[in-house]
Length: 261
Image (cartoon, rainbow, N blue to C red; front, side, top):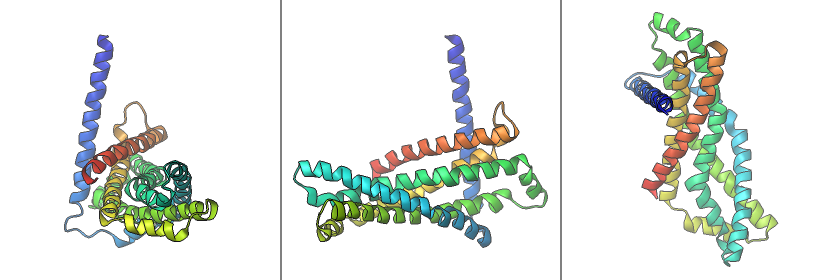
């Protein structure tokens, strides 16, 4: 019993240390943005990687999510005689919750894992030490453009996901279930408010910071990972970064919903 408590205490201490280390890292990244220009070329390259190259999976996942939502809501609303409200139900679910969350999960899987692995490899190959020797701040040169690019890209991807999801619901509702297309769109126009759109934007911004922060921080401190080194350490921290990003994102989603609803 004593050994278990001791192990639990040691794990708790390591977790607190890591949270503190990553929080300090995030402050350093934001501080590097104050009054200092960030390379436009690096930012555009990251925006293309995060935004443009993520578009296919966002389009597919948004389309199928909207179609599945329409099927589920059609069954439920038919039982209560409110099937004409399917458009607003699909749109509200996507804009307030599923759009930001599903987009963030797709970006975690594609961008978060790749970014963490890239940063970890750079750390193992001592590229950050080389930049420091050349009087180049690795935080400003490598981390800041990725943070800004994610903050710019994720809200736009979320908006695309929402629009495609609504269109997927339209396909199911109008062409498969025979609902009125005019009624489907009109209920969306009558129901959606600026507060709903604001919630989607705020969540996507919070998720963007969370995803790229954990991915970069985990990779940057790969050399502090206990018991593993080299390529194994890269795989371990990448896996941990994906899991930690998803869990933290869902926790932030609950907190944001509590304050914005």
